[in-house]
Length: 459
Image (cartoon, rainbow, N blue to C red; front, side, top):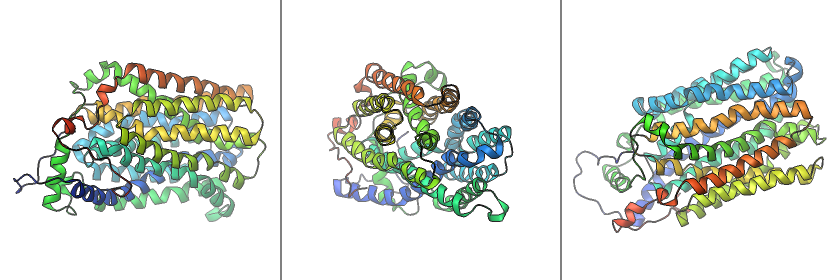
């Protein structure tokens, strides 16, 4: 991210005491975060609702566990292919156009999924949904760098990612309610009604995005000229950890792949839980859709708490690597223990809940690492590249888990393999990415400015 130029007509340096900056960032937070929060809630729900639809659509479509895994993974094939281009395109056309387009198209693709009549049609619908959503998440991560400096970004990223966790909390009960009460609505089967009802809000929010979002602070009419200048000055202090030479240089940088491996392991965890948790709970002997929905909220409830606490700790200490790696190791241990609790609902769900919550808590802290490591011009492509590398796990894991489930009859081997991947991601991140490359806010301290970590009241 390049430093923003001061607003036109303002040449004098403005005082940037802690209270003025806190008030400014509080104003920005309340303007941007509610909308982004709502968008990511819908994004998560529309992405994982297939895990609940599967409980009913499998018999209608003749969908085996292996075929379902392919259908879940088809989403990420489209997502990975178009993620980097979408982020580069956002840099040219702006966040408003990009996010509006993404919301409209993914809502339309979700509604269209209600009309699939075969496994092959499901594969196509999920692929198109991935194409539609490509660039949303890395685009928002990039967008936040336009408005918040590195030392405040951990908490802000946490607030944004809490929306995904919140979506996980409500998606199960919401899906169960729709499927139980809207079966036969407009002649639709219960799983068809699920896709229609949960796809329409994204399209409506897309219309709101066109009028609500601003591409950059300079275009924000809700900021005064003095506030724009203060923000530009504060963002201008930030020193990028490293400058890269371009796309080819990024592809040759081994540390990009280290960062990508860490995200791959996190994403494999959250993705496996999201797409297979209802099936896993059903395999424990719980058959009622509503109870499955409520049990599936447990990892997200715990994750919501741990996500905020970990981000707060990370921002206060200005440390990222150990916070992320520690969460991955905890999750790995839990998934190994889950195999020891084979067939027992309570201990198995407890291990799954803690392991999933640890991975969820690692996400916001992790996503402060790529912007800190990358240079300004390379941030759009680099963030999308890291996200795409993680998307490989999302592409492979549903297929692999489905194949393991079909061949062995249970999911425990899949979670053992997932534990190994998480441990590898943690160790590699610590060994191959020196802490000096992630010294958040060091430029401000070197210039004699006080680094103030955002507090609950600030956000």
